[in-house]
Length: 572
Ligand code: TEU
Ligand code: CA
Image 1 (cartoon, rainbow, N blue to C red):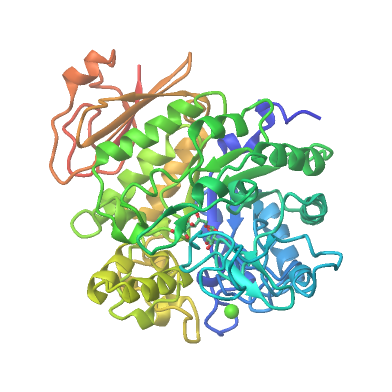
Image 2: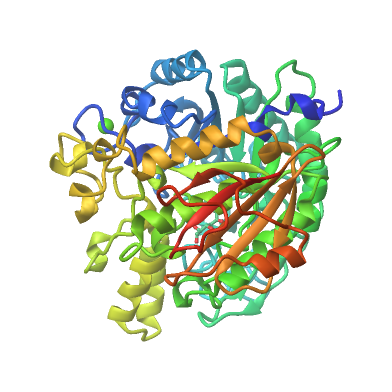
């Protein structure tokens, strides 16, 4: 059966909200967020007007990578609750007209998954070939340094190979050694994944976000990569977007989704994917995924690796966002996001969380949400949560930070400079507990939170914003309502304007019936209204037009743009 017709692709007019369960809300006082905590806070999410919730993993897991290391795909980890709790969450979301997208982590499992426990036990058990096993490098003794089958470096530091004496072989793990990569060349592995996906769809979920799905195929031969500062090699050219990716995704669609009556949203997490491949994979008529998360704007301030970067100019940001808008065009479909559980907080990274906290948080929301695609809000973004500051390495939790720290200190990097980089770019920025109120621990837990609450919770919290005119939360509610009200914001073509302006980000959304101008001043200095530049782009006589939304009080359509002022105008 072909893909659902475009008019039935409900995600095109949807707005999504990501919940990272560990940090969302704790219902039982153990300091860790859980599913019942989400259920208790559903009105907060529904109040925004969002249509779909993406839930980061709640499956059984040793939590080595906070749940992205799954030991049983068919059960819920007790610290998050039970399958009955999840069924209740699905029912409660559906009752509110919202949908649930689960996190599908199938590039790897936990090393405690029964599949891996069996696979590692010998070379001839039924699952011996379910993971990526290789002999020591020829001429080397297994288990000795340098004997690894190739020189790839893990995302979490060190080699991507772990020695297993029982098999006298290594297994591949792109992430932690407790996250062995599945062997997608094996049709039995693919069938087991498809069966598990079907089990979840039968349970009522409405789709999946697919963790590093473009890493599932590896280039045969697993060749060495270019040597990095750490002395290990860069394997990305050989495990990102491998030769059989589009074949596997088409097979997944045919085996799991096409046979069903339901219409499901699928989002591939695809670091390093080219816009050309994304356009094919999200093709409206015969693509295998609804959309993908691309990472070019997420890597914009990285130089070599993420912890040695520097802030990037807005011009580079615009160039990347425009390339994806134009590259996907009307052929495929984009996701639109500033942050997630792996990224720093948007208002701190791309805005000004000191002098223009409200203005920059809302201006960034406008220019992202009103592009062509499905917007994703990461928990806390709707109340302007900011990056956190930890003084000591002991305050951090993230396995990526801790692994990088050990390697970098070993290479003689300065500790204070490292701590500053971790505070600027680390994933823990996104994982401090959601700030519900000014109560102890920001109302997140009655116990001790698993990760420190940001000290600014007394001033930045949901209780102070929900229902309060002029708050970030209420602005997001208006922005989402606007997106739902104006079909041009879903169906309209995207046309960039003022492409050479260093501070103004402006574009049109256009259908035969309507033109909407979206413009924002992403700087701390006022700017005159760009009358001439707009006229040069056939955008004439804006004065007097209807202002559909603005993040400053009662401003006219063609008035100057104050620092971080955003404005949405219906052109006559
Ligand atoms: O992240 C994959 C990924 O792209 C990471 O390299 C991510 O960009 C990096 O951690 C940020 O620098 C997914 C999950 O979102 C992440 O939480 C997991 O740690 C990872 O896969 C392994 O499952
Ligand atoms: Ca709990």
